[in-house]
Picture (cartoon, rainbow, N blue to C red):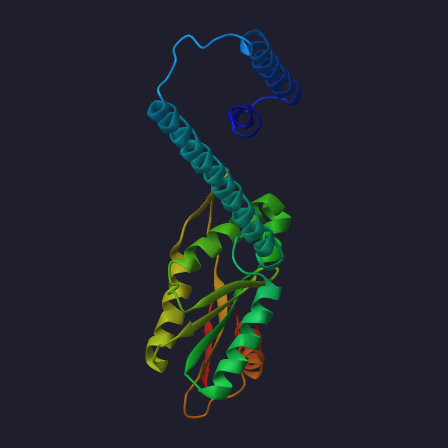
Length: 250
């Protein structure tokens, strides 16, 4: 257990760990050879010997348990990170298209049991190609990160925000009325329009177009179909001049 500290916890290079373990092993072997046939310096009583061995066993059990827990935490965290990799957008750190597909399938199953009203926003950054062409893709990446960061401020625990692809995001709101949903869409549009994006001492202003579909409880449609409707609304917003919210209620 003492030697494992050198291997597991020490931030040493490989040859340093090997050297440390070798020295400690040699020390233990040398001491064992020197003292195995010698009388103990102090003869312990039977109860003291029992106490010593009991404490020794307890410490060994606790040590092994601690090591096991340590490795369990490492394994759990590693599994969690690996599981998130295929479903998390590496740039914006929000769910990606794959995660969105899984989320829609889950929603479809839930709505078969009980239909609940929800609002779906398809959000697109206006003239994003011009940003990449003028300022470079690194600047475009910064804009995408800041965009995701801003949208996250409007998230509740039951909501979904993901990167749909390119400069497009999808935002699904639950437990919200029709009026509040459309007001929120406009609030997000205005928030982005008034925001200062500072990249390499350059101050940039961007706008967004939003296709907003409110999927009411009374006339609830399949969530996959609802997304298609919201996507159509987004293209209508872009064709009508951009920096606008196109709304519809089912």
